[in-house]
Amino acid sequence: MSPMGVFGGTFDPIHYGHLRTAFEMLQALRFDEVRFMPCGNPPHRDTPVAATNLRLDMVRVATEAQQGFIVDDRELQREGPSYSVDTLTALRNEFPLRSIGLIIGMDAFLGLPKWHHWREILKLAHIVVAHRPGWRAPDMGPLGALLADRGTHRIGDLHDALAGHIYIHDVTQLEISSSEIRELVSMGRDPRFLIPDTVREIITRSGCYLKPANRPVE
Image: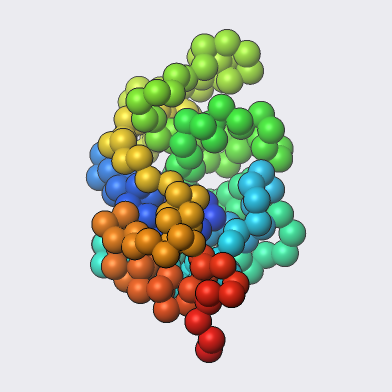
C-alpha cells in the first residue's frame, strides 16, 4: 500500500492554500491518502478562534469531494496538548506496516527542535516539507545535520521505508493565511475565492469570526 500523508493544523479556517498543498503532495508523492488532522489544543500556537465542531465541519466539507482526502479527528478527541509525536505513535500502532509522511511547512520545520520529543518523530514517520519561495532549508545546526543524515531526493525512499527520511517538495505558492481570512471576515468583508464556498457558508451562518456583538443569534 502506498504511503499515507498526515497534514495537521488548526484549519481556522481551512483554505485553498491548505487544499492545494495537500493535493500536490497526494499526486506528486503518490500518497494513497492524505489525512487532514485538525489540531485540538495546539502547543505552539494561540487557541483557535472557531469552535472545535465548526473547524471539523469546515475541514469535512472542504475535502469531501476529493478522492484520497480523509478527515481524522483523533486530536480533537484527545485531552491535553496536541503533540505530533503522540498522534504519530497512535497512527504507527494502528498501521504498523504502512509508510507515513508528516506534511509540514518549511516554517514549521525550522521550528522543529522546539517540538515535544522531536527526535522521536523520524522513528515514526517521514517528514515531508512543503517548500515555498522565500524560505531556505537549513544547512547548519541540528536541522542542517539532520538533513545531511536523513534528507533524500528520491520519492521511492518514502515508499520503501516506513519512516526516517526527510523530503523537501516545492509546492505552488498561494499567499493565503487563515489569520488574514479571520481579519477579513471580522471587518465584514467576503472571503470568497480564498476558501471553498462550502466553508464560506459555515463561516457566514455561524458568524464564528465576527466580533461577539455582531454574531447571529441562534
